Image 1 (cartoon, rainbow, N blue to C red):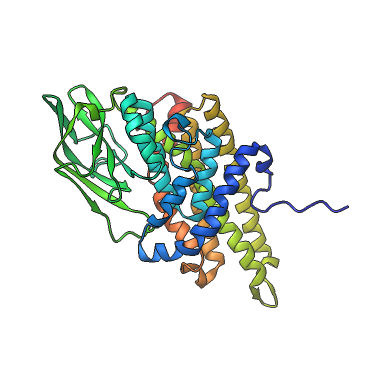
Image 2: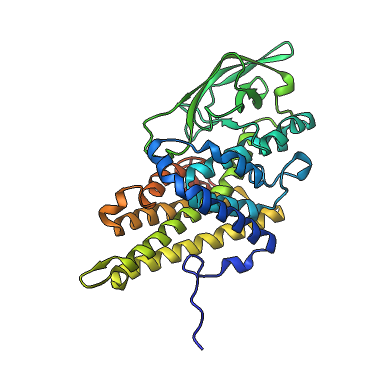
Length: 390
């Protein structure tokens, strides 16, 4: 009896290691991506348009703040389920996953982890429902990979804080109703919940992007923006606050590029079986099979890394260095596969009729944001040697 053929996108049957609930989450998000995202996302990328019309359904599926307890109107899922959400959304487009990552890990998470009970009850249910969109103000124009070199500052004035500064490369900036802004204070770096309609707050969308075109990227400007002390996140001070948020977001990013790579591989497998050159399918060419096999090897490695990382996260033992290793490996894996798939597609690969060029361009951002590849390599190097080489 012949053995059943393996799933080319899951050679190690990672799916069998998931719980029933995790598989249900993956299937639900996968259907949403297939039915609602893939038919429009190429045009959205071409038009540099974020598909805001999808936000109510994304919220309705419980994908925003998915791991936050149900008490706050969220789904209360585990970390692996959140990872699978990111994987499936990025199989659609990195811009869509970025939207959900920022809302969930960079805005809702700090309110949940560092906020007061009043702040949690005020913001989290509305954000889970997609009624409020958030953005995360950390990166600054001059700062890049060095967030400690923060120029934005907040000064106490009676019962208020007055914030001045600028932030750059802010996903959701021009969509946002609320921003979590990190600023230097006389008592270290602190976080503030800033409604974007506050006088002195302005967002300017970044145009001429060749990456994440189906996403909103902005610069934020804060000119004597006044917020009450009740808007300060009371339960964290110092750089560990924003870095803790980044660890949450980077975890999701280890999963997302797997979806992008799977989309590219599936497309190119189908293409090489249909494309006939020199009298035989392209898939019958040894060079093509070697390339496809290498892609499957790298995707499988990434899947195992992220699944184990998710299990560590759910056990409460995940360390930032482990996140850095997976973010570094999986982003590098996906961008290399997208480029290789673009090459196999030939001239057709440069159009958004195929997904490889879109995913490849998006991954240029994904491999850069939330810690560049070099930063994550140095994090691992520091763990191995005990020496900080930054």
